[in-house]
Image (tube, rainbow, N blue to C red; front, side, top):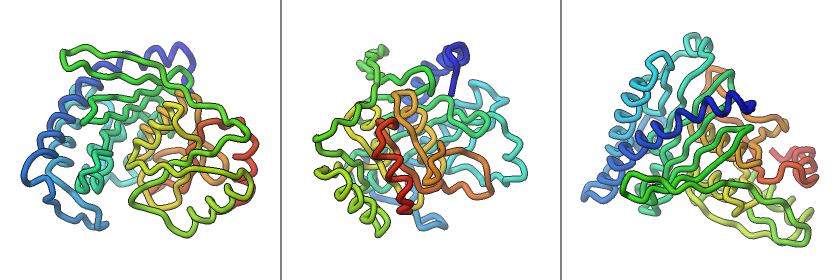
Length: 287
C-alpha cells in the first residue's frame, strides 16, 4: 500500500500512461471495426491471438520503455522471461495489451488494456483502459482510484471511484464471466445463497469486473478458473485504491512474480472487505 508521499509520486505516471493507452486503444479499435476483426491464431495454451493484441503490445512496450528504460516490461505477448531472471525484478510493468480477446472476437466490447506497475510483488499503480468508451480506471492503492473519460479533444473528465458498503437485506451483486464458470463457482454461489440470500449475477467480460466493483456497482467477483497475473494486477490496484481488496483463498492480498508460473491463484475480488460474510466465505474453504 502506498503512503501519501509515495502515492503522490506515482501520480506523475498517470497522464503519460493515459496517452499511451489512447494510442494503443486507437489501434485496437481500428482492428475491431475492420473486416478481418474475427481472424486469429491459437497460441500454445489454445487462447486466441489477434492482430489487435500484437499492435497494442508493440505500442505499449515501446512507449513504456521510452518512459523509463530501466523498468522491465512483462507483457502477455512478450517473449517468456525465465523466473531465474525476473525474480530479481523489484519493479516492473505488467501488461495485458488486450485483456478479453475472446470478448473482442465475440463482439461484446468488453475488453481492456491492462497496465500495472509492480513493486516488491504488489501492484502500486494500475490502469484499466476501455478503448471503445475511451475511459480509463486508474488506481493507486492507499491513495485513490479515479475514472478518466476522454472528451475526444485532448482533455479528461475525472471522477472518484469508491466501492460500496454491504447492506443487510439487499441482494448481493456478483460479477461473473461470460466465458468461464465451473463446479467451484457454483459451489461458491450455493454457499452465498444459503448464507446471504437473494443475489443477482452480472455478466461482464475481462477486467471490467474490477472496474464495476470499483464504481460501486457490485459486491463480489469470485474467480476459480485459470487466469494470469497480467489479467488481475491492474484491476487489483484499481479495486484496492477504491476501497476494496483482492484476496487469495488464503485470505491474503494477491501477490506477483513469486513463482515460475505466471498463473494467478483463485481469488475473491471484494468491494467491502470489512463485512463478516467474507471471512466466513474464506473459512468455508470452497476452493
